[in-house]
Image 1 (cartoon, rainbow, N blue to C red):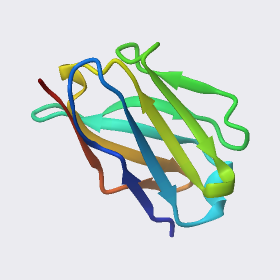
Image 2: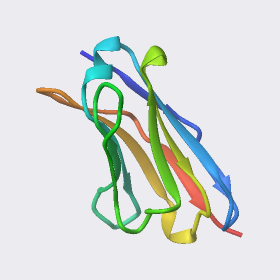
Image 3: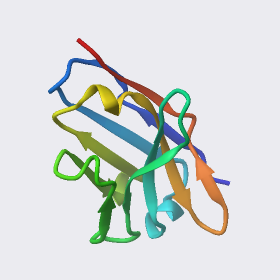
Image 4: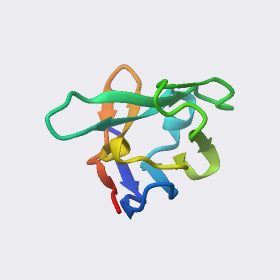
Length: 116
């Protein structure tokens, strides 16, 4: 079993920045693909960004966040980050951390609200 704990969400004005963190309870998470998803009210959960295991040299982003969001990982801390810049109201959602092993693990989610 692996627990994922997200943090860093909050209320921010349009154009602002936030950094989300996802801490895994076991170091084994470092070898697997991890990602961030989000779910806005009334919408399906969607992929935001994913990062490969190990060095994290491969990343992929949803078109809507390319150039604004950056995913990274620090395996020494068993943590994955999502740096979000130039936030827009459409980015408002609950953001979930995901770990893919033979089991799909999810965090509890952190709310991000972009509003003036």
